[in-house]
Amino acid sequence: MHLLEPLVTWRHDLAAIRRDIHAHPELAFEEFRTADVVAARLQEWGIEVDRGLGGTGVVGIVHGNIPGKGTVGLRADMDALPMQEVNSFEHASRHEGKMHACGHDGHTVMLLGAARYLSQHRDFAGTVYLIFQPAEEGGGGAQRMIDDGLFRRYPMEAVFGMHNWPGIPTGRFGVTAGPIMASANEFSIVIRGKGAHAGMPHLGIDPVMAAVQLAQSLQTIITRNRNPLDAAVLSITQIHAGSADNVVPGHAELRGTVRTFTLETLDLIERRMREIAQHTCAALDCEMEFDFQRNYPPTINHPAETAFCVEVMRDIVGADNVDDHVQPTMGAEDFAFMLQALPGCYVWIGNGLGEHRSAGHGMGPCMLHNGSYDFNDELLPIGATYWVELATRWLARER
Image (cartoon, rainbow, N blue to C red; front, top):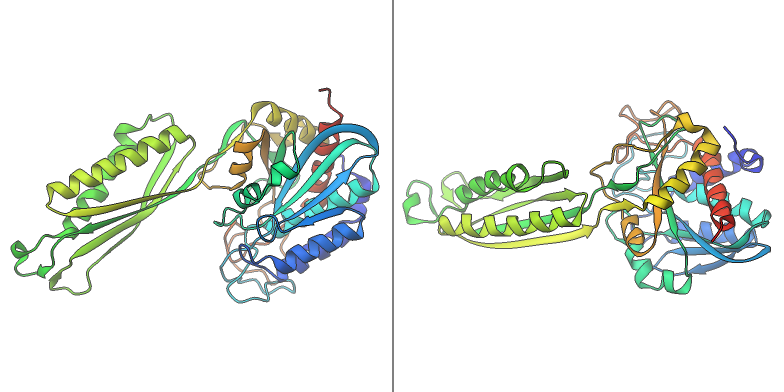
């Protein structure tokens, strides 16, 4: 493994920053303390700082000492999750119901490590933009930063992201060209019937039976309308109806999520869901309200930028430790909005299996969005080295 020596030397300092952020998690658009920590470190290292994009976002600007007009963006997310941490080690969350259970604390510090190195080694041409983004966990902070003028104020040739990935061994990377993470979408279908005594159902219109039939029928979209080679998920996760055993309720509601890797398949599923809901409810004499919310689009890596990232990763950890056809996931990521706006690539860095956790960790697995999770500090110099090498080599490439 070929790591930049200063980053290895700083690993304990970086781990201390990471653990401090872990102990003080902040939810979407509430990352005031985290943003203060980031901005203070960047300024301490002589880096120009812009604050406020997307609410609590921070952008660091590092200019190289060699003349050049090349630009590149590196992005890390800063927010935590609204869930309880079950770890009891010293740096466990000090805020009830808030936890860095997805490793954004580590993402932030890997980019900070790269920032410190770049500020001290400016022997490159062009400009590196360090993007510290709020509200990835459902808040759409990436889009908020874009709407606030991120790419207008700081024109970038490409933008890159990285996420730790439990299950991939430490010291390995995973990436694939094309879709790597799915779109995330929510739906609600409210069925309105006519309440009645359960012993005299003929006097009412039963929305429960309509909900049951609709739940079954919606799955035919996946099995009969969708191209089986184009992965998609339609999960009904909630059905609500009624309040008493002897009452036919007046309404029922189905809620759930749809995940796809292409917008074309998403268009198909939304259209067919609406049609099936309308006709099924009409056939059973019910009325319905259909709501479909598109939250995050699929995260789709650009081929040329992906190939570039693969070469950088191979030079750092060796070709045997880079899976350039990693299996995509049906999880979602709002870095997708940035990849819709600019060329770029989103990679996974292995977080191991959990053996790195300090004494006092919870008994659960070290998986994302789990109360026993903790970021692996061994990744800090690896991820920071990746960011530095990616940025400087991008700026040095022929145009």
